[in-house]
Image (cartoon, rainbow, N blue to C red; front, side, top):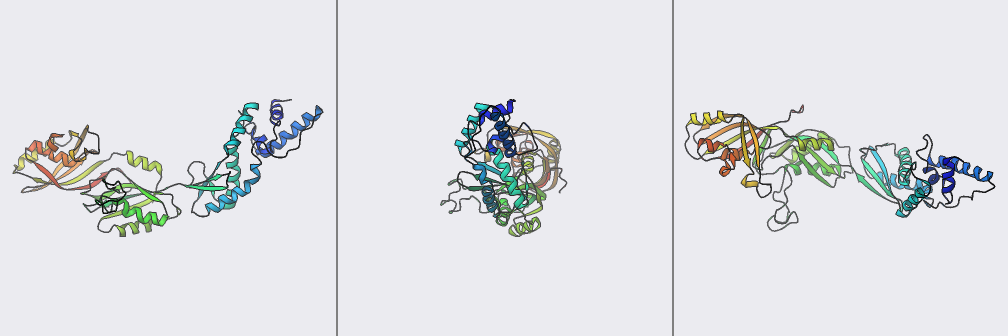
Length: 412
């Protein structure tokens, strides 16, 4: 008696269906199903026992799965019905199985060996998936499916785990009064209180909401999230070719969106506040890339000088700061929400655009993460060197514009 027949003979001390018997030897050979494999092994065991003058008892009810595999078509039908509620191009089937059945399977493996076996959930997923695939004519995707239909085989209930939508774009912000992302009220943390007039928000609109709300509505999603390549201060404009971002829509019931129409709706929604361009489909890996990227930025800063300064002196200081390495302690204005530590940054380039009376306009190109307002003011000595420190006159940024994100993108 060879090893497979001997192990199958021991396994059949329990009443097993062909699926559960064949699954013990799933990795022994390919090109057949567990059900066919089990049937063949059962015949071999019956012949071996017959040669010994013994009979193999007839199969009645599977000790392991309780004939769960007889319900494959029913499980496929309820998955198909649930999937019909949403738009999707790729799918995957998952299953929940009664823990008692899994315990029995592990007990069987301990008795006869499970090194070549396949778990019951793996076979259920595959066999139900084949039935669903044939019916819906959509592709199974094992890595990044649009939706996973999770079937609880105990109760015949299906839950859909819908993958989010990701949309890349660039935005420009013209208002100095709106943030990039939703800003929950600090007092109530979004619940609604007197301070926020019951809205739960510090600011009633944001770049995120201008585009996120219409896209979420079109996709029939549950929520939206905004992943920007950095952010500008609320009172700073974002101009030029815009800042790259990825919009994430959670649990979308519709995936086949017209991105040109979404762009139009967002721009209509954000009239005079912000605009959006170059919308295209994206994915989670690009979110990670955008969050990790640290591009240089070009700014235009309007500065008020609080005393008279010799123009030649300003020219001299500006020239000396080109390619300067500065040290910035966490600014006073953000110290309540960021760790207090020193950061070194480089001023790549610096040029005077205009100087009239007490108004100086500078064009700056800086390393990512440079605090421009503090570089100008010195922030009480927390940024060294600073423009104010070197010209020895207090200065303050009165208007700040980001005019370029130097991200080396081919899209703007």
